[in-house]
Image (cartoon, rainbow, N blue to C red; front, side, top):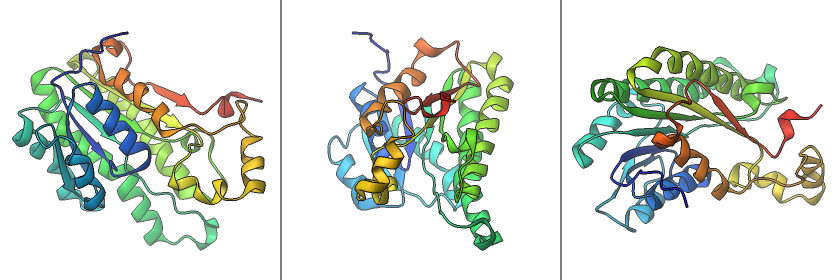
Length: 250
């Protein structure tokens, strides 16, 4: 077993109440990390916090509230003394026809999926650059690489997040702060509920994935923990795809 040496580190995870965010938060906690878990749903976060109030703090936060998002690193520092890891996981993916999505919807998608991670990276980065170390991990999507019909705003926002990851990774590469992204494909979460509940739709969806299955939420946690550790110190500005081979096939 490889010791990732994360014990005692402080991490913050957005969108930590369910799905991939919850799995990521739990994986980091199991590695000994002190955790600030943020999401809109405080009830589910409190359930997580109750596991270990000394090492987990739940904070309700709307990702559209830029000031509240930017204040999260300071909350982590006041709670645990420092900030080492930021996981930008929160996101929204409204589906629909492009011509029916107005400016208000686009602004909301960009606010949550791009501007919130930017605000969080900037606020945390001030502390990370001073201490000469830090990890920022952006949860993007394969839709940001390939684009997806009926998810134009979402695909655009995740594409922007990927480019932010690459550019910021390059800017901070010599300062001890690594910035990377993970691009998940189809995972068995609430976001895929309509697919999972329809045998016909599910069959078609799995037919596009070479491994003929969706990922499970628990499969993303170890990858996040690796990127959060110093074992990945030579990886920055990179995008790691986890999609069962879907985006690599012809």
